[in-house]
Length: 320
Ligand code: UDP
Ligand code: MG
Image (cartoon, rainbow, N blue to C red; front, side):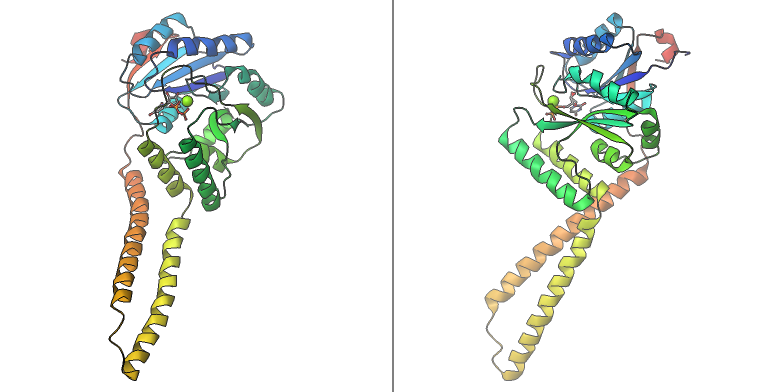
């Protein structure tokens, strides 16, 4: 496979977006064609259950610079992104959502900042979260505040709409973790950054694929992989309780020696309940870290590709 290295690789994860994916990709490609750079578009089908893959096959037949990867099941957006990034060959990689909530019109400015101003990372920052439910914007505000306090990385407004230079991708490849949180990883990497504020557009069609439990899982993953402060917090609670125990212990002993030691049933029950729940929560926090270590130690592949389309190469060369 001796394809020339494109200047830009687009990486787009998709999950159950059959209703609009062909049209959305066409619009993105139109925007790229306006610019003078060579490009490839890598779309990762994250185990969609609708006709997304068939749509992508159609796109593959009508576009010259298209690669489609079909994951063997739904691995989640983070790992779908990972699959795309590992297959990207371009001098810069642009990651974006497939639902046009990330406006393709910004691509020109992103590439300009990289090419002309020499920025290594160009990130688009949400100034307005679009028409999100109050519930979602509130929970993401809480999440980013907590993460900021715990990890020191300010990700408020961060999106996955980013351009990364080849050298940043190279550095990212050195991060072997299975527990991926792309936004946090790029913040951790550092490098010379530029930001472009943008307003989140309406979804091109279909609806968002983030049920509450997936968001919660992502939030826990992000905290566990970017901070060990919760573990120290467990020791801190332990110390606070030790202090309480010493005070109560002295008081109880005193009462015993003075001779009026029978009262205090309610106190005992309350203390039992409080101490019990604190122990449970602490074990839960430690458990999250152990689960994360276990996942890393197993060393399974991060994702599996079951099918591949490449419009530049004959199917036989792909080995499928
Ligand atoms: N996505 C994915 N795997 C998933 C869920 C979502 O690849 O398990 C893709 C989805 O197709 C879209 C992007 O990730 O291109 C963002 O998802 P969505 O629009 O549902 O999230 P939101 O914009 O509400 O944050
Ligand atoms: Mg979206």
